[in-house]
Length: 92
Image 1 (cartoon, helix red, strand yellow):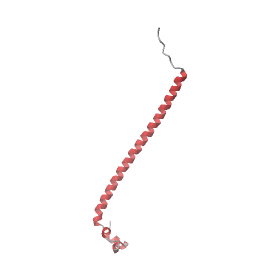
Image 2 (cartoon, rainbow, N blue to C red):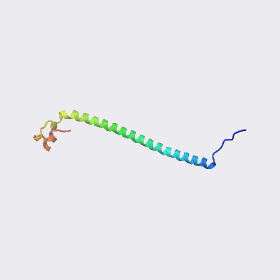
Image 3 (cartoon, helix red, strand yellow):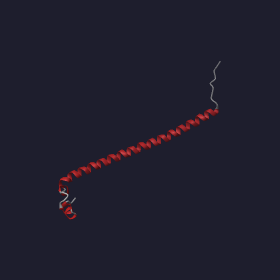
Image 4 (cartoon, rainbow, N blue to C red):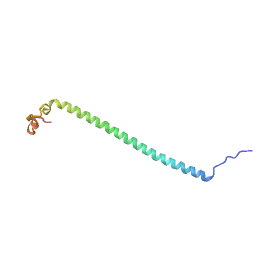
């Protein structure tokens, strides 16, 4: 006597297929969002690297300029902080 495999009713098969399609679509959307987040994060990290390099260069330029800048060597009561004297003393 051969045993017959029982097949689920046709309505159950369609219901399962519908759930599977919904799950696949939901997964597709989640994957797209994940890729966007990953791209945004990579862009932000690149921007941080660029800004860090710019900051390093500016600090380096400031460090090189400070010993030569007469404004850094003036006291607050001195006349060297007046606009006429600053232009003459510190030309960048």
